[in-house]
Image 1 (cartoon, rainbow, N blue to C red):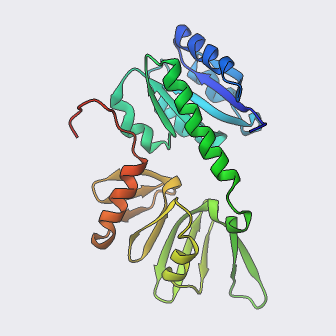
Image 2: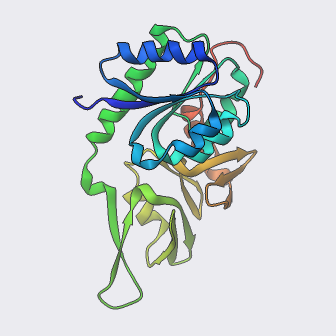
Image 3: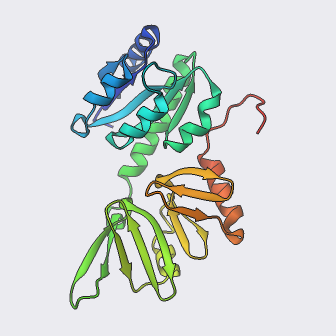
Length: 248
């Protein structure tokens, strides 16, 4: 991998910042862009133009919590790594789509292994066939088509002989079946069918409360009995867990 990943550290503890700076400088694939000890300053100064690849986010900070800040800037970084001294934030970290969860004190070996996982996922994304990134659907007008970027799909909703494709910007209606779209997306690990009438993207799940899935567009999808086992396996694979004996 030739390009270095741009890193930002947000932590109110100076010694924690210094440790991560040392670790980042040690890794040949990383480069530090900036760091913040004030979360409000980070909120105001971080923008999409910074081209950030990894944000290392502390949870307990004065003025603004790491969870709230993560929600505000999640779309401005490719990877989010939670760094905290408390295991209690694991569920919240899942809710803000954190890629990794590092418990303090963070050793160099744990840090290096985590970076290796991110680099492997980065390589996997680059090896994805570009042709699978989008598809076109026919509109209700003759000879007119609409492009659907797969990465923008939040949810697909079945409506008898039609489907609604909910994306980050708008909703499209297409004369397609749920089975046809499920087949189209079957090689994409981010999509899972959770009910006879719903396929959702894991990228846009913000919460799972009991058997209700809450998405980033505020829609709530009930988990169907038939697909419950499949979804729980999917959820388990994406959930960060402590190796300690902690009650469920």
